Amino acid sequence: MKSDILKRVLDEAFHIINTEDTIRNIAKVFNVSKSTVHKDLNERLYQIDVKLHEKVSEILKHHIEVRHLRGGESTRQKYLKINNS
Image (cartoon, helix red, strand yellow):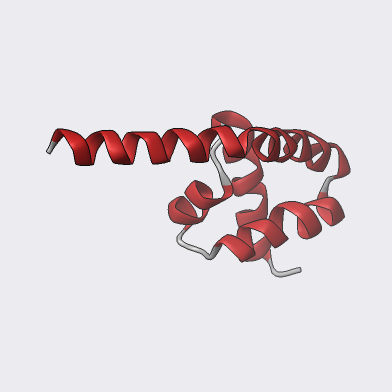
């Protein structure tokens, strides 16, 4: 694996552990696509560091568990903003 990819994968992993950002936010921070972040954190990170991959997987699993709540809140905020305009 190239050193720049290795560095990006580890940076993304430490970023998600420290901030618990979503994949979408991480993609914006690192200026890559969501699919790249997903591949980095699920496939490449496992090859690099299994323990770190387990920590990241727990955070991603939590994101999946609460995504219906986040989506509902986003929609609620959107319509509150429209109605208040």
